Structures are given as C-alpha cells and as structure tokens.
Image (tube, rainbow, N blue to C red; front, side, top):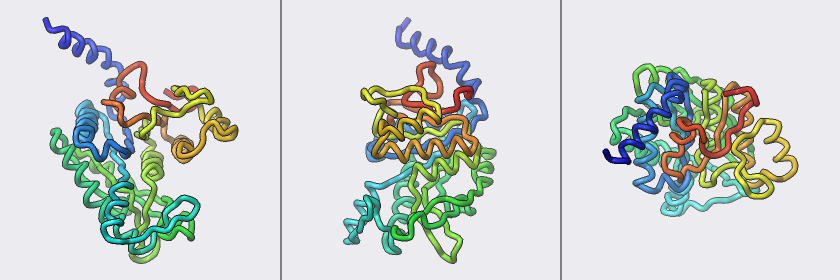
Length: 286
C-alpha cells in the first residue's frame, strides 16, 4: 500500500480530537501579505477555509490589500502624504481604498473560495452596519477605528452555510462617511464582537520572537505586555499583539500570530498538536 496514503490516513485520524474540538467554533482569519498576490497561495488558503467550513466550523475571512491600493493610487496619479509613517487618507484616497478592497481584492478571495467548492459572500463593514467607525486620528483623515459592530449579518451567513469575506471598510456616524480600517484592527473587532474561539492573524513572519530571535509559541497577555514594555516586541509586531490583547479582553478565547506563507498554516494551527506561530491566551484558556 502507498505510504503516502497511510500517512494521510494517520494524519486524519490524529486530527479527530481537534475536529471535534472546533465543531461549531467561530474562527476569524485575517488574510493579507504576499500570499494575496500569489495564485497558488490564494488557492491553498481558499482550500483551507473551505475545509474549515466542511468540518463544521464557522470561518470569517477579513482581508487587507495595501499593495493593491498603492498600485491603484500610483496608476491614478494620487499622491500620498504620510504622518508618523501613516498614510493620510483624504476623500479621493478613501474612494480608491473602497473600490480596491470591496471590488478587486474582495471578489478575488470570494472567487477563490468558490473555485474550491465553498460558498462565499463578499461584503464590507458598511453592509448592514457591520462596522461603524470614528476617525482614529483627525490628522490622518478617513482612517477609522471601529466603535460599533453589528454581527447579525455574519451569523445569518453562518446559518446559511456561507463563508463571509469582509473588506475592512467601515461606515461612519455622519452622512455618507466612509473609513479605511486597518485589516488587523477590523479582524480583532469582528472577532471580539462574535466572541470567536480563535483569531488567526496571518502575517509574513513566523510569529512573536523573543530577545534571542526565537519564536515564542505560547504567551499570556501579561507576558506579551512585558515584552512590549522591555522592547522585545517592537516595530510592526506591536499593533498586531495590541490587536490580540484587545480581542482577548472582548471575549476571544485565543489569538494566534502565524506565518501565512507556510503551506496550510491555519490547518496546522487548528488541527495539530504542535500548532503554528505564537498563540496568545490566558493561561487557563484552551
């Protein structure tokens, strides 16, 4: 008998406790980075999401699209101004952000999931007031932070057997306001509002690293805060772990920061004993 078949059967058998553990669980997955621009990586990600749904989980995909936004702004000749490293999002820019995220990027992911046999619906935070935001910093214009969430539309899609794919564009409290929301922030807000079992933040790095450069596989919120305070966690990892900490405070059971470039990264994290990346949770959480 083919050894590969035997290995596959053994893997499925070993995954059974985890399949049972996550049956009915809500898992929010932030998808972004280099994988979004690679057709094979996109297809593999979509296959993983379809598998999650097939085994009884309720996945929600929240995506970014920074490189695609930059490309479109360049094509349109729209110059960007930056303050403290963050892009000022004026009216013209936010219109491009909405067009790219809710159109081009969102529908690519929806199509990829459909191509793998799943059912998916693309929406943005503006649909049914899923995400209502306020200006995060007046100097940055239409960059928002979520202040209200209406997740009923997501629960309705769960019940219908459909995978929601969410673009991080939010409505405002004013008339015809649109805000661009950081993808990680939007994913954390949605996970918190759903009290999700897991929030998976797929990145281009293996996880949170200690002072020696080794990936830390398990972290408590207190340990995470200490690593920020002493400078071990720095740079672009800070907003990711801060998103994780806020999500945990809002009721998410655990947050995992993992390398989305790793084949089947989400499945390795959910369905194997070893897991993948860095999991942040309260010590007694499972």
